[in-house]
Image 1 (tube, rainbow, N blue to C red):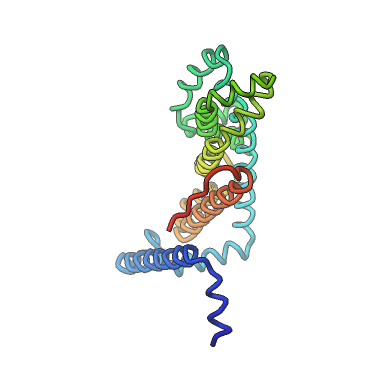
Image 2 (image 1 turned 135 degrees about the vertical axis):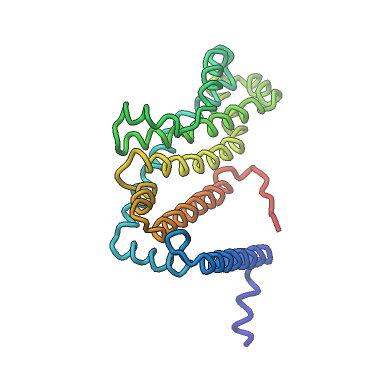
Length: 266
């Protein structure tokens, strides 16, 4: 008996508590879902969790689900990479240089409130239906939260740090790379997490309209065929993958920004 109990003592109390509440939350949600679906007794409107579970394995068996997951992830990661390469340097540069900030910031301020879905007609006209338009939409969705956080992080740099670096002979490029960027990284990383989430939501939206593959396209095709269980499979997979990507960035953060205080939540 002792050999079975002893390994459990190695689990941190906070992790164990969080896992317990996660199980309780999921079980409660599944029970509520199952009860409502049984009361409705209409699988086309709301299938039971078991029917969705069977649908998941059917899609896995024929390979279609994995193909659509791969297509969606590829579009998100490429668009997110493009947005990161553009938004982080631009945010830091505009935070430091006055003239570029005065020229570009009003344009970005006007473009930022336009939702990514409003750009889909133009994306189709410019790039056609396929991966290129999805790359554009996902990059656009991720760009603005990453830029805003990068710019805010650059503006929050302490002036005494800048003055101290200047006294030590640092030039402008060194100031940006060794002072602005490390100081702004906590907010930049927060922008990356938000941007990845926005990009993930945008790719599903774009695939509903401007793609021939991906999770969004799968949901749309099965909706037209009244295969509601497959629609819910797509929705559940989208939620799980989005949560996993956010958790992965949160895990990587402690290694990329070791100087940021890490707060434990009970």
